[in-house]
Length: 139
Image (cartoon, rainbow, N blue to C red; front, side, top):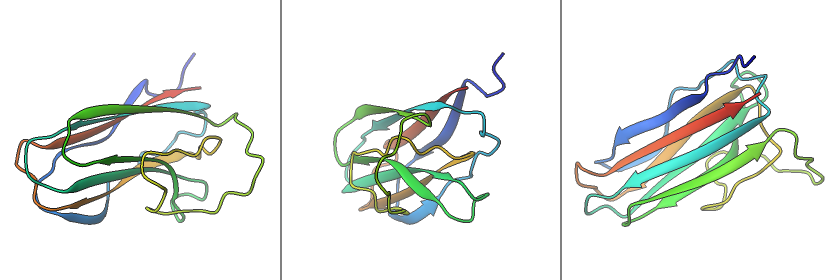
């Protein structure tokens, strides 16, 4: 029996004016999660320069946030996915990053009991530009 919601919407917004390190509401109570599938759907309208989102997790109740995936978009509609597992052995020390993980990369093996998105954009996108990030959890 699963105790986790099947899919969470971590972000779903229309992008217009530039944003700097805006954090979205954290989702907590995910301690049973063994893996998370992440999907970012970026729908480009026009204008704008970059739209970057970091999915983050926390191991200390939300005091410290750790980047686990980075989605980086510019001027093309596309969808990207990652699958991350809490069961993947991490054999090297991982330096905590908060909004600085390299574009379009992920860090497997790290999955705390909370998830959130940190978002930055540059330039002014048209009102039809949107970004949606979904998390599919498995326990």
